[in-house]
Length: 438
Image (cartoon, rainbow, N blue to C red; front, side, top):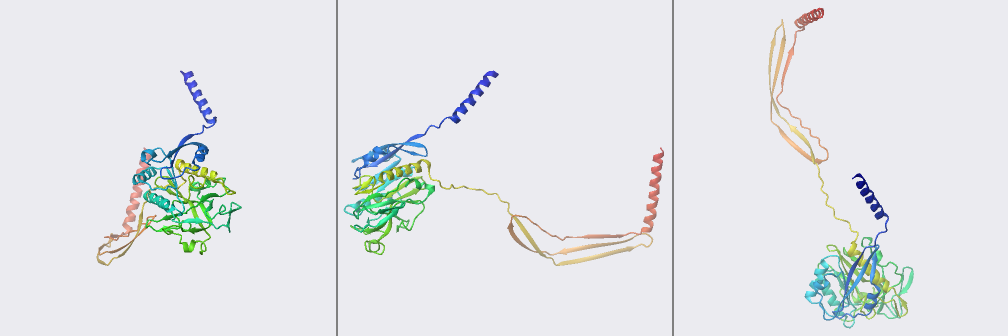
């Protein structure tokens, strides 16, 4: 029996040592990305994206990407989205049905999801696309919106912008072929450093609008100068101006100020922005042009002789989304602390005591023995009390009370007392001697 027990102990120790020194097996799981093609979106470059991004690795964990296309004639339903992690909607040209918007909202609020939706400039049919995007964003409760406008940079008098130490043009040889710069807000708690990791060149946004936001009162806001909790700005237009091609007029960027020739025609605008939903650990990313399906999507690696980092950016964006929905941001946790505290009081009593005293003195004098004087003091007090209370961490309680006092004074004649004392002393000595003799 002892041998069996010893063998089991040795086996357990051996297995634990093997487990501790063996290389960790990489974890893996599948991320499902659904791409909407049912609302008029083009699939340009979508095939390239799906063939090139078949997996992503985040923190040593490899995530296999399973792509699903929502094709023409299909409806976005909650059942269709049940196993979807990321939903891409690139530049819709038709509106979403109410039941589709409800399905997207419910899916997003189920937690750990990403909704990406892109718009277009207000050129041609662009206002309809912007309106469809904004209606969906409003329905699902997002603060983000697209501006009813276009973003341009001058051509042929091309402005330049220094990005990561290199000077780049702000367009690809046309005022509407706008180049954008991946410069995410430095928010380490949201791992935004992942978004521009390894990126050294701009990305293309062909004929874009820009991102704005709206507060709870319906007031449109400029995200360049005003932000809100959960807003993460990812990509920027630099040294640009606003164009207004079709009604309605821009919500934020007045054409008189931000239009070409206006006092603010050399401005920055937000090209990509994300809203983090704190209650659900979900993301809503909105952009002024699409990753796929646009006239020339953001995936482009070169355009009109300008080298671009489109593929790297799209890959980084997907990796970042996966990181957020699988790991979560580094946000401070809410901790409820219960403090048990002993509260003491310093009580200062100021007493005004008018007293009425009755003193009775009885004196009896015996000249041959003892003279005794007894004084009895009777006090009748009426008390008026003022209490001042202060909360502190230490307790000092001083209460002074005066009641009835009786004092008895005895005066002794030491002559007789002395004699009696001597007698008692002698008797004591004698008794002690007798006891000793026996």
